Image (cartoon, rainbow, N blue to C red; front, side, top):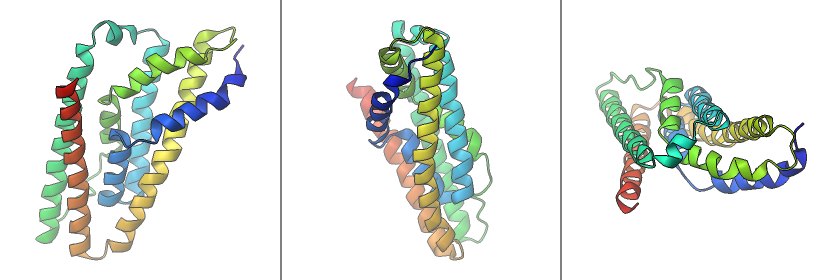
Length: 207
């Protein structure tokens, strides 16, 4: 019912797509630095949930709406940039509280934040719209084939970006006993959010 012969080339395309830094990768790096490995694991599950939503949307055929109304993607990008700036503000506030001895960066919600960062990254749905149909192959059931392809993509991103988050979280774990070091990590995470939001804004203006 499905065509497995296309999977090697499809997985190679996914790796090429995931390798360049993007919102999801930057978010995982920032989460690892600010919250540690456990927070990174929660965040990558949130990102996986957001990606699954997009995959299900495309498989259901609803992705055609974004194809015929591209302005919707710009609206999503703007929302994503605004959310990243809010995360930068929250992280900076926590860094300042660390200095005064009242840090609360581990206030949680990493999973929900991961979902929001993922669903406000329209490149994911663009990837699904452009790439999934190219790997239907000789599948007898195109919908089932696209479901399989979407699931593989989600799993690969969880593994790759999850490892990035956990590795960056190891720095947090080693330095968590030092208030000064933790504050520096929080400011580093804040900088990642701001740079990423700026990059998204520039991309919108140049589009």
